[in-house]
Length: 309
Image (cartoon, rainbow, N blue to C red; front, side, top):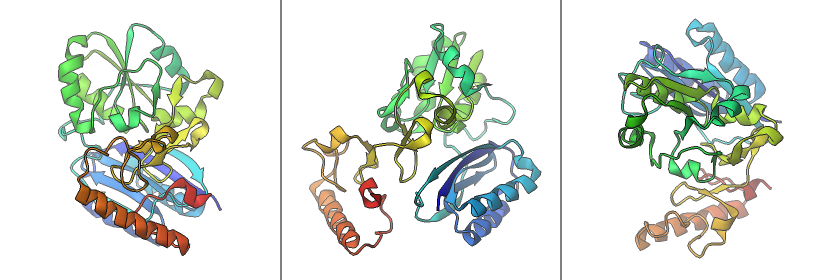
């Protein structure tokens, strides 16, 4: 049985977001939907997984609440639950930029459909900006895109101040995994006086789903926030794994590094962990391997793809 992975978000004023949280949690729990949903005064954001019937029930719930008409929504399919548990959380922002005052519903950039994206970013007069973080950009991005080299999305305004503020009259095209970060980033740029701001509608995931491989300007894989780790053209599961020591994506080359130790360290975090922390991680990895031998799942750890092979 295929599991449906649904990525969704919408910026919409939700004065009743706390009460809505309880109703969503109850519905998802009854339907064994797993993953994370975030609610805030500015809207709803999340990625969840469940059976076809379960996800259809979630869609019906949102449809019946007329405020979610036009919600940004994408599906992909896997053979296993890519999440272990359900989280429905209350936040100040559904994507944390540190600017909760932004009214993204009213002020945002121009959406560009995936079919028109190649032409836009191929224009030498357009500055293409990847709004994701370094651990994401290092495994894949669009050809010619500028990497802001941020560790968190909250650092994006600093990147704007240091790099973009002199380019307010230039056309800027932004993208992210599912569309939500570039939508909020474009709202921030417009508030700061930028004139022409564009964003990839549906994000990288929609582009990979709809763009034939031979026409694609995407290079590498796209990091996703679940046990698949990364996806490629057609939103098929990629080859990257995850370092449990720092949650960074791992390439096959990383795994041959002398600084890689399964479940403990990788080239990204080897020098950052104390010997005490490495000791704790080794003990945890030992428990994971024991659970694997017993054909049990060690709850709380992102499982290596080899577990499913």
